[in-house]
Image 1 (cartoon, rainbow, N blue to C red):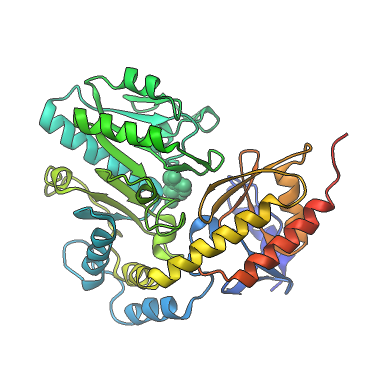
Image 2 (cartoon, helix red, strand yellow):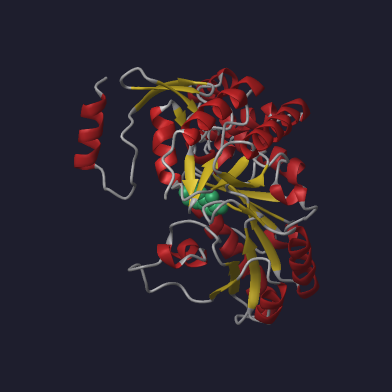
Length: 396
Ligand SMILES: *Cc1c(COP(=O)(O)O)cnc(C)c1O
């Protein structure tokens, strides 16, 4: 494969909505991935939190291909086994009661917003439809989830936007309390803001929000599209905080690399979503659900112990590297605040040249390694990143 040809063809025919690195990835295994020129990289991105078992995990590939050779799609007019099996596993892991499957994080959040409005409007009347979200949040790119996203930068030129969304600053309880009137149906938040800079919510604030919501029967929607499926060291990030939300959304890591989104709710909410209230042609696809079941089966206690042990070593190691001002986030969702005027994008490019794939979020460097990583791979990443940082030119 010729990397230049791959890149040129894509640039000619694919819409330029992403600023891509000039790397054409060809094949991978575990945390190793090779580009079209045969250069190897250590992957600390997981395809933005997606490939939780790394590239081409044998058990996941076997589960997906077995289902692919059996029945690839049925529509939602019929039952297939993998969909129900996955829903049961998710309910057992989260304490929630019912699942709706879609194809992406944005679609899951759309479903969550619809379910919250449906419950509140049918219970309290049509005025109760407003959704509060946090400043600096990210909830997706569809029009409703873009509106829910509390960052102006994403909004320019895409209006008019759907009504009845409002934003409050994170960790400001007075602002939330003031905004929480009887037109609000839901508060939607990420426990760790991902795209917003890898910022974990303060525990006291999260508990107070949950208590206020419970008191007023305002639904708490936790967007776990990025934080869920073990990323932060517990299955849901909400479990770190001891929270039991009314609605949780999952996507990114759930399919292990295939597209899936899920809305999980309590029976109270699900009971208002009757026949015909929502749908998705591909939602609950048996091939993807079979792969997702393999992902969940892999995430047992021993696996999660390794996630937490590696997260600990990684965070301790990062704090000692040159030009690192602070390390943020939770578990294997890591933000790195750089000192001495270093630009995250420049460090990312230098890492790529040195054979390490990393991400950025706002002005931070961001790491989302596959959850199947080893201590040796943590050490290797720290070694490369340390050398890259030590060699970066420092602003005068
Ligand atoms: C990535 C992300 C989304 C959007 O997911 P898509 O699959 O890209 O639609 C929504 N919420 C959060 C927190 C995310 O990180």
